Amino acid sequence: MTTSSIAAVERDARLVNARHHGVNPGEIAIGVIIGRTSEFFDFFVYAIASVIVFPKLVFPYVDPLTGTLWSFAIFALAFVARPIGTFIFMAIDDSYGRSAKLTIALFLLGGSTVALAFLPGYEAIGIASAWLLALSRVGQGVALGGTWDGLASLLAMNAPANKRGWYAMIPQLGAPIGLIVASGLFAYMVNSLSAEDFFAWGWRYPFFVAFAINVVALFARLRLVQTPEFERLFTNRELQPAPVIETLQMEGKRVVIGAFAPLASFALFHMVTVFPLSWIFLNAQHETGAFLVIEVIAAAFGIAAIVASGFIADRVGRRTLLGSCAAAIAVFSGFAPLLLDGGQTGEAVFMVVGFVILGLSFGQSSGSVASGFSQQYRYTGSAMTSDLAWLFGAGFAPFVALYLSSQFGLVASGLYLLSGAVCTLVALRINKTLSS
Image (cartoon, rainbow, N blue to C red; front, side, top):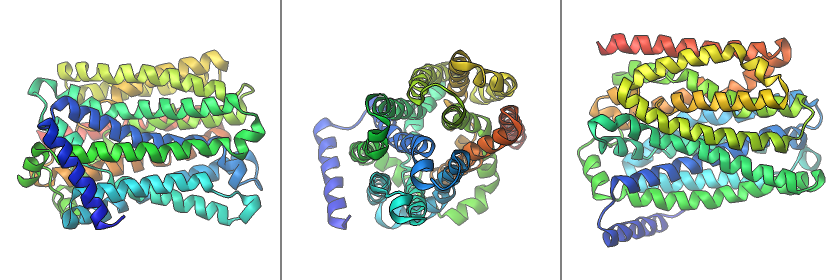
């Protein structure tokens, strides 16, 4: 992507704003949801393929469990690469502007995702297939580090004091929406095609769709970052990038606490999305397509719970809600293994209850600590907090949960989830001490 093409897209976004006389908070919210949905759609398309496609395509020379573990290990690479991407793209943001950063990042994300649609298997190129898979996954991770646009912060800054919880939950809606679209698309392909056709070409279609969604999300975001409101906040340094090293030196303790505060919800995030799909695919007798439909239905409950989290947080406080949800996750970890091992009815209950708790917790997970950053470091500090929270809380969760469950039974996955809940409660306690 050339400098002139980036400038042309930026110019078009400004022209749209000029015709529509600015952007109101409702339009900001829509832009934020579109942007987050595109990211999570890419995320879930890859996650689902990591369970039902890549072990057979890339690792056919090992047993299905080992192949899935290898696939999950590569899955984690994006979370390792994401902080590196933040470091790179913050420098691009500082030197060339946020429009250039977003354009390059989203085209890299879309390009890395669509490249997977052309991935040759082990039978065609041998072990090089795994290396190409890993390279594309690293590309996704680096790109995700550059997709931080500050729009969630812009939305929060435009929020009335008594509705901060409501506005904090809006960006989080992108996760269940992205899951619904990705799971629904895969469920349709699995249920409509023969096993041979799905594995030959059907699984590749969602990766093409991901690129198209990223293009739409790019323009939606560029339109918003060219608004007078965003320009004013950027000029006043409220949404201006700060050097990563300097941010860590000045706000390192808050970054670390912010990364561990949502650990319970981020661990649960994968425990009700990626991990159960892998467990059902490897161990259950019923069709994978049926479980994908259950995921779609459960994610709809998750949307309702995220919305509810906004109302609740504005009444009891975000920290109180997060702490209560961590306690609920700890309780859920005790009987979750029994539900997941309880046939289709148990699986459905596991998914719905899990998504309700996840929605209440995840809906407020981004605002509990990040709001405490000083103005100068809020933009970069919030991005780094998000990166590390996903790395510590979610990056290796599918791999660890599947490995422990395969070795010690499903109860081990419950203990793993319990550890995340404990970390959240400790982090919230430390943060309260720091803030007092």
